[in-house]
Image (tube, helix red, strand yellow):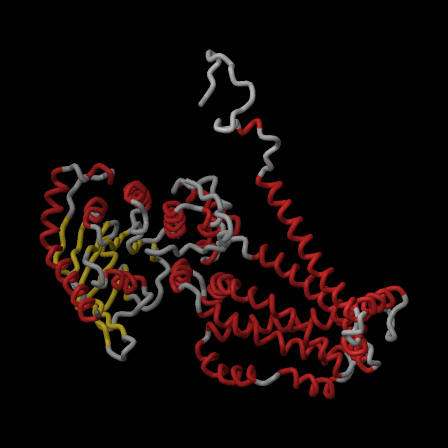
Length: 300
Length: 269
């Protein structure tokens, strides 16, 4: 089917049964542009879903099918958000409220994670410790810890302290159990190898157990920031003089469901941003792991 | 001088059902300084257990293990160990993996790095310093493991089927390279394998272990001239002679071990 120059050029137009030279096809999209196009379409579709939901909701409110007094309405939520941003909230500027909640959540997250990792690795490494404390930790884990919020609020007052402690308690257990499991699942050969190379017990913990358990620990950190945020918000709802939780609480007291929902939107934005940051951290820390989606180039 | 001595060692392990399993029984073995000793035997005969006793990773249930005249009481860091599976640290770069030993032993970072670069050159991995182990092939990871172990200049080197996961060609190349590296520092080597050809090609002495519980069945001196090229030594008539001799001793043990495993699976099914 290949035309050689010696053949008379009898056929002017490409015949349908002759395979077409790929070069003549107008601009075949490269894999890259196709991937980009796919992403754009996906993002568009997602946006469309949100718009359809919001419009349906608003339409139901306008048609008096849904009572905005109980369920709120998108227009009202938007109006509240704009009002908070431009004028400020009843408790002061919106930025200050967000900062307070963020501070509580981040502090609780950091302290809880560090405590969880340290305790988890220690108990995972030292058998006596785990034998002594494991039953207590299991018991403590089975308590609905939100209830502790009431105690902390009474004991530590309306300030930031009680919220941070509640967040710490919520974060700790998730991280702890993961770090503990991670420390126990370390490849025995790696530990033996490090010992034979001359590592002390502490060097084995720091150089082998900790990095090996990090895969487990990082998985728990994703969920843990959500818990920290819950701790901060619940603490604020139980009693505070600042923060998004209080904002939600006072909206509820005023039967302003739009305000509650607007608070929820803000919390969701914070949670998603934190999730993205943790994913970045994970990529950085777990660079050594083989890529799971596309194969890395092996040499030799 | 005697580098390694196992004196009538027995090792028993507790099994999950509360019984005991005897891995090796009344096993005695000596390896001289600078001697390359290969240990062959059927699967499950306790070959690897002998290495854990010499390295101090495990204690014998009975009998004694000595390294350079001193009884082994704990992990002995003058011993190098190359594992069957990958035991390089996946989160460290190739350079940091090799530098680990000196750093653990208190060398400064720059000293350790310089030494590691030198050893990476010796195992032919210059230019791969910044890679992570998962980016290397199986053969290259073995070289990293070798460099990681040899950088500490061990007087005793224990190798537990180090090349069993490699393909046949890579394995032969690695074996020759191992001999060259061994020649540079001449540690006493115990090389565990189930491959008799590999054992004869590498070793000065081949020890045949019986089907479990393992004990020494016979020892053979390998008088093939050095330096050897592993890929070609099997064409040597003396090689074939030795092979036949040792196989005679090994055959019954392999058959015995095989009969046991098949009997076990028949009972199970």
